[in-house]
Length: 347
Image 1 (cartoon, rainbow, N blue to C red):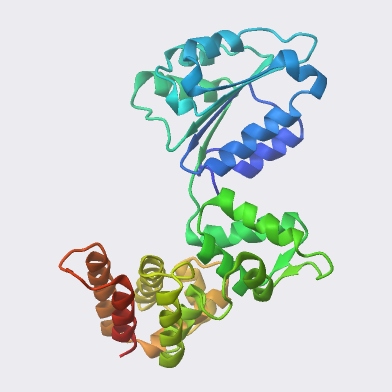
Image 2 (cartoon, rainbow, N blue to C red):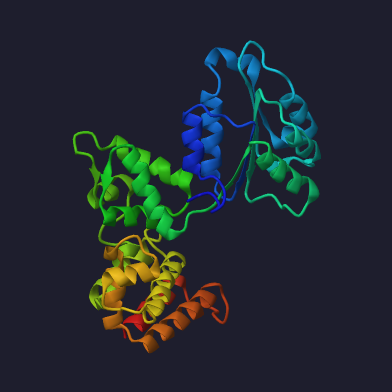
């Protein structure tokens, strides 16, 4: 979920907005701008009728205004409308939040104030920040922290986004997209929308072939296939992929391979401590994976890599990461380091 465990989720906020249940203040903050923008844009497009927006909707940027001006605007009453909307984008650029903290103590009931703080969350240890957060919560407002998706959540996000569009996707295609684009949700949804446009006449399911054609990710030479080759100790296939990466760095590079393989072998090491290592269901539950299908690589890995070898690989991954940053490495190119790493893993 994008929100905190004890706070409202993005989905819950959107359900209320779609039911036209508007809060007096929306305090949106965090490292993932996608959800912040989605909420703010929905309010801007739906809280007022088009004819009401000229006099009752104000959108400003933090660099171009002050907290005092925002608070004064929020205290106004709407003109021939049920409510007014005040949206502050890039609110992290406001110099002082004291006027807004004071406003939050008694917000105007006919105003919907949306404060968008990006690139991090408010430091509640600062008095004005803490007051703004606590008073927003106390007086019926919404405090939402938008967090970056981890790898597991990213796959679920892709599937959910497409499910809302009534489109399916197979697991390999999901992996290809997630690995190629990463956790930049704005770029990710833009690429998914591009794929959706291309689906006319091809059914309602995204396949690796479609991903390869529309996004430019090879269905044979990608991080997912490299991991599969390594898990199954397929030396020929792994070397093919690494050679392809060395000449096509957009498809894969040392800097994308390292975290991807580290995540796998770190989980493989944990799998050695699972109560039932032979059951895919038990391993999936132990590692908090979304399905037993995902645990298959770890059960296979247990057969192909001893605990000692797994620890050595983790150590090698850390060594190569340091050398990739230039530590104790005067002239070895990233491509050569990648080949060296894969050779070490497989031999």
